[in-house]
Amino acid sequence: MARGKGILAADESTPTLSKRFDKLSIVSSTETRMSWREMLFSSPGLSEWISGVILYDETIRQTTSAGIGFVEMLKANGIIAGIKVDTGAKPLAGFFGETVTEGLDGLSQRVEEYYGLGARFAKWRAVISISETNPTPACIAANAHALARYAKICQEAGLVPIVEPEVLMDGEHSIEVCYSVTEKTLRAVFEQLRLLEVKLEAMVLKPSMVLPASDSPAQVSTAEVAEATVNCYLRNVPAAVGGIALLSGGQQEERATAHLAAMNKLGPLPWPLTFSYGRALQDRPMRIWSGKQENSKDAQAALLELARANSKASISAG
Ligand code: 5MM
Image (cartoon, rainbow, N blue to C red; front, side):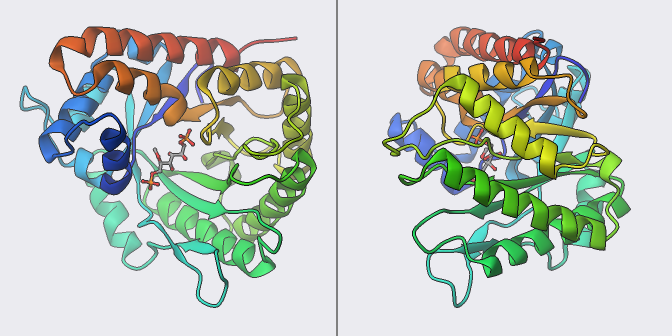
């Protein structure tokens, strides 16, 4: 949450990263996934804009082509390593089309191991989708409870938990519907965080923005998204929370940056409001890289440009 810095979410599970590689005809293997991430993390000067990188289990155990572990390499570059500890969103029994994120079994042991491997923060993503009938109160409650259990376990092990309740942009719903679902979700999450006595100062919230769905006929301006999102957080996120690092959720990268800047212009806000983007930082570099070593410099330049723009957006003032 250092001023002007954000987080790079490079914690795609192997199936997700393979899907992204597939679209660009990049072969997905242990080696290509390692090369991709080595190229990103070794971008010269990245730590000027990025303070933390979220890793996936495979990456935290890998070494770079120079034989250095990724955590050590990031540390040498002034970046803190984090780790995704959930094991994915799985169908919620009895509730068609909804999921609950799993991974609590054995989590205490796993986080202890990750701490030993050098991770200093963690991430768990809950997924809430919107349709005519969803989300149900059951889905919100089950995910909120799991997020709070995870956060408490992390804090006990000395890791800062990133609590990520993502309301998906898929569908045709309006910004008003997104607002109402995001509000219900945040209320449930903070109720559970309080119940489990999670220290709010020692956690980071990673929420989705309040937006119309990607296929909604009622698209709105950047200012309207910023106002709805900031209002929703002001009403539902306690001021004690250490910081908010937004996800991009599949928005076009310029939109994600413009929204972040417009939100900060509505400040001063009670918490630092920055970014923890995955696709909005990596899509363009991945297209440029395309699995070819000779494109690395250009791909790194694209990452640095996006990171710098979002850093600027995280400190813009009205
Ligand atoms: C990087 O992608 C993460 C999801 O990976 P899996 O679905 O494979 O578990 C995801 O949690 C990501 O950290 C956030 O959604 C932020 O990424 P976007 O692309 O939404 O900014």
